[in-house]
Image (tube, rainbow, N blue to C red; front, top):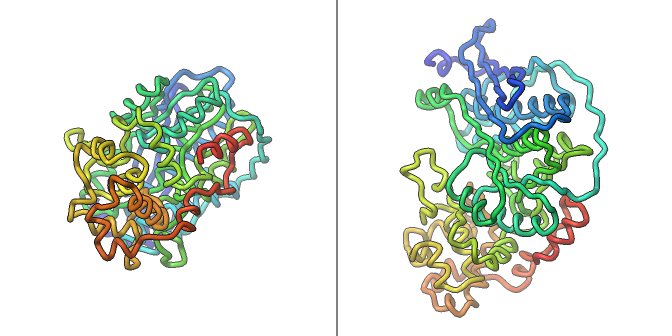
Length: 449
């Protein structure tokens, strides 16, 4: 461990080995870090267990190809520990796979590189034999009839669930690992939940404890490919996520890269994954792509039956079960949901969601709200939150709400300076044309505005 962390990065090579599959449900994603003269300094073996029953007519070649893509995506968790100067893929890469790996590293790890001040992490030398390009698959324009909907227990996936179930006769919910808000959402929706299990190699945690670099990885890309493998294995015809237009909006520009905490939720990553997995029997798409976070939140406000069970707080998914909270009340996501949902429901209902806590009245939350509002050009939080203009639109709508108009928070001069006109509010509820929805889905999403 010590020799690995003390070795110069220019002398290290990160190797993405061919994934293993037991023929039933378990994938093994294997990696090595080697030093001078090829000496193996670290090995990792991540396990992914796919759920459900396998169908006999599975396309084995396609399953193998997407397993290799998953190995590339999941490699980010291990590569970032030491950021070796060279990434080697002995099994080879097609041109499209190479593009995927380049962008996954350059943009998917941009926040990690920025926060650790290691710009060299974005541009490793990639060494891999060139594989022939897979012929473009014929895509179907038909709407999915047996989709998997990714669910995380939050408002966005709930809006998708309720819209898609009206269009597709056989909906199944999907998650990677399982937590209480996910189970509660599935139970409340009355829909089946199928759960894939992802287990990172424990040696990575040992390496982190010894001082290895750590930080954000493009987890939505990883989960998307696990979803695609689940769909292929069990005969589903679509993997549907709930990423919105706002997720394509970044945090800052640094070292020639737009650093975006949500890059793997944005449309560029969706396009990359879609081009690699879409085919005649499988669709990959984000149902809410044409909408802003604020527009989705307005729609979610109408789904009051879900209000007691949803959460957007990361604390609900803490690895230590004893530290889990449905709402911590002290993070960017809690503040964002409070600010953007409050204009569309009563004050009483809003406080019930947060167990009586008024975040706007808590002085310790003031700075966090000002960051969401981009007040004084503060930096947008590195979290899954909407654009500053959406937050300013929500603030303005809040100031017009009879339950909130006299709130002391709105009298704060820095807050009041963030109020906006109707043009900014209207822009938060437009339909964005950049999406990959079939016509029937597009019509349904337009109906949510």
